[in-house]
Length: 346
Image (cartoon, rainbow, N blue to C red; front, top):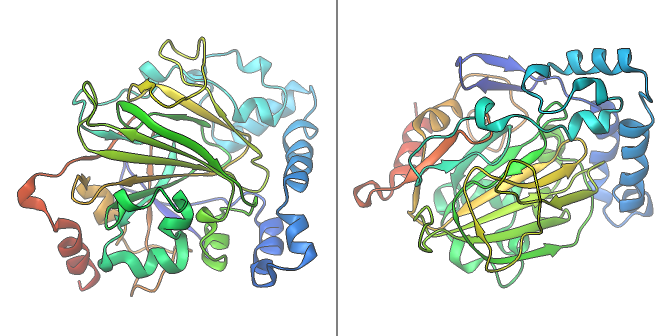
């Protein structure tokens, strides 16, 4: 099956080029043999580091002409890059590129609007009973995703799953303003997050190694939508998540620590290298996702996210610092369940 998504700016359905799909098809089915030695080796940190070196450091060397062709193949806009593209002589440098985000990724002025933390393909939903069977069986288990002490505030809340692909800009930016209530690492494997693999694997986002940041946006100066969990998930060939928060472009990056105030839209972290996933979690009835994103998920397209509905869910391609949700007015409580019920029965 092809995997298609909706391009948000144009509304067009696009077909995704799945990089390294052959390798991933070989790895993914071994989830059913999770205890096997081979599967543990394939999703280990050592294998991830080896594959990352082969694919992102050794492939191009210093041959600039090949690097330029590589970037054109990926469809990367060189004009938005902060650094001279002539310095991008390996895929790693391409994937870890910096951009002029203030000009190229402007954000809405309303401080309560939730921003996309990355250039990514997006699915949204709710952890209530309306959507719970999908999440429990396919994407993640809430308690496992956040750890045994982190799940309670987000029970029956909203979620956004943002999947980065290898061509994307790989810095993550803050989705909201607020104070860091907690940040911690949960260890795990390095399984692929390719859409086909996500369906074949059991709850990959809650089993891979991940960094969890809990942001209190109700703190003075914050976005005012309650607690927000930002979960940065590694994948095959993604060995590191570097915390690099900066309020001055990319200068003087610092570790994210409890008590720190984060400003929405600022760089927070960097995936090194390749592609991975960010999961955002919100408290119950605190946010409403943008209507176009909800509608897109029910578009007629071929998607590997076939999660038990009459139609597969279709992702929307979003850009970092663009709005994806806003505070939910009280009279809209229950909107998501009613909306999804209507969409699924059209």
